[in-house]
Image (cartoon, rainbow, N blue to C red; front, side):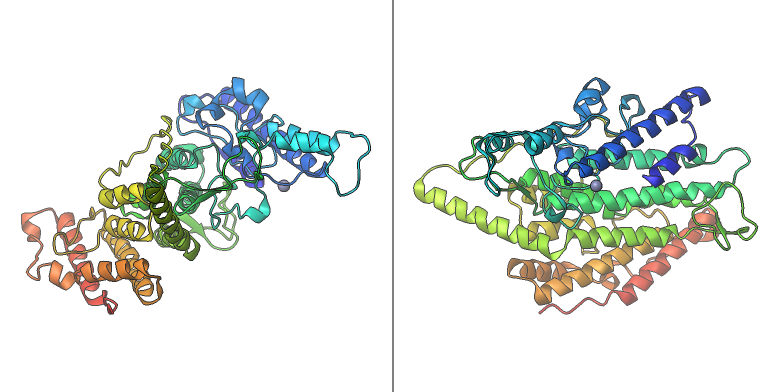
Length: 496
Ligand SMILES: [Zn+2]
């Protein structure tokens, strides 16, 4: 909240918006933020707990329609943790925060405050049971609170803090498009004439925060489970445990693979060149006025931070609980198919994947990214398909293609190699301690990696400097040196 208010106060108008109009936007932003915060805290005072399924009640497009959200709310409750509601397409901007008490809130208060005659302690009165039963089949009345693991390490993608809509993958895709737009506009949106260029680095850090949040929360779909609190006999209630469909898992994995891919970070790499930072004492966060002990200039450590983000997302994707859930899903699917074959009834058709929202302006179509493995995951989610997808997306050196990553810069190539090496050591640990298929697939993938010494011809040479541009020559030399480093350092773990 504090950060959001500070951001609102510091942001400059987008191009084409005059100061007066921008002042009105800032005013609306602050008022809505205060209304949502006060409503949430009053909800606690009245006895309500957090409900992190509230934001999952409605579709993403409707969240930008003020004629709907003014009375219904952005989500079904003020007791969720909502991010600021900003689409990547500015012309769609609606409310920034929810300002209406939601359907869930009204229902929960009715349950808690309706006077009933002859109530007996510790027994649910029939009138209250009737109110509670209204929630079984209504998507706006679903509930998940703090002990349902609403953070990125949970398994239910419908029960998350800091997401919006019934389509979190679509929401996060759009959020990343917004982060890309802001990164491209960093100088114009954060630095007033007369201020330090160093103020832009906060936008670059925002880009990285968006990537880590999107990657780790979207990963909840892979091996994910939608839980329902319905009871036996509830009319219209969803089953208590519903695995996320293969199509939706593959859609989520495609977005996570983009974030750990090399290309995703190229816009940041190119932006870094124009972002100095102040160094000294008390320079963080950057301030428009330069403190007397904060006058040094340096480069922000954005490259190492980007590597850290990629590693964190890779680790979040492959956490033990997720791999266990995938193995369990495959196991139960096999059992369902076997049992239905025995009874000669066809297996239930998987639910269709929701159409992606049309608001996202994603600049990096990943059509070719791990297509075969994503199709495999769509047909039947499994740990093997997950490992094959990551392996394909990271473009490890094989006999058919030693360096298929785009060579954005020598430093980026080196970073990509570091991610690849981290992946190889994860594969080695799965080979040593994984369960069944996981160990077998990891072992096969390790065996398929060809050491770069074999994949890169040793007679590779850069064209002479006088035959080509000097910068291209230097770049080529740097890349060759990195290939040599990679060749010496790849130590393939032993395959047992
Ligand atoms: Zn709270």
